[in-house]
Image: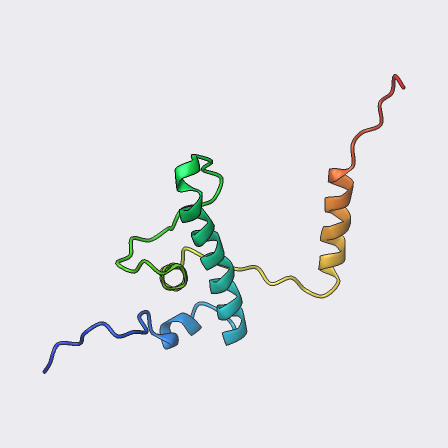
Length: 105
């Protein structure tokens, strides 16, 4: 049998769908991670080092392909936020961001 050559879509969609609950989640997760990877490569010369580098070794140079490979490897996961929880998270973030009042003032 002929050797299977890598196609344009590697990893396969079928294997990726096993890692997420819907195609929308896969697209959103991959796009967000691809932006982070792109930002990482853009800031390399500046020496900032605040963005997480790619978590898999890849022959691809495209950020989206690297992001999809990370999802397939299980390196990138997501957490589903239920309706109503987002308001609690925002309220908690606002209380943390508020400065403490100065008792001497």
